[in-house]
Image (cartoon, rainbow, N blue to C red; front, top):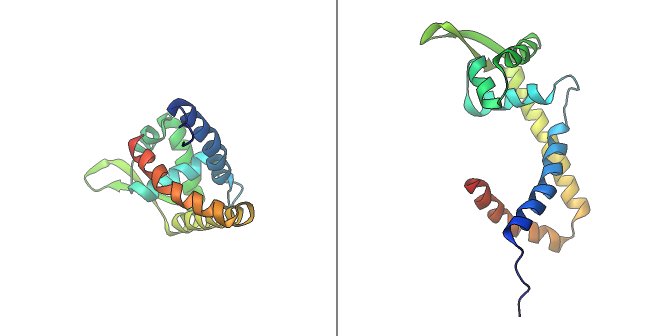
Length: 146
């Protein structure tokens, strides 16, 4: 007789409780202590979605446009983003990543990957690592559905 399946609501709560701290810890790593989570999030959005106005970035991040303007100003001061006139509408300014901004994200991602790899290798047995690998397609399916 097989073990009873977990109630979906309880499984969902347990999954969130397990993954939430992992994601927060990975996001907390900053190669440069001056970059805030909001600044990093804006850089990631520009990297994934391409150039955008500050208003578009604000909408995507769920914050006020004024707050995003402050974030973009700080990132521009550090040379991580640049502003240029929108070729389709000269009244709008479009924000895009600079080479330095892209390099900063690459370094942060590499360090997060290194930390996660070390944690898996040090904390999980070979059998546990295989179990985690087998669960990944399930997590990907859930992610597509959420």
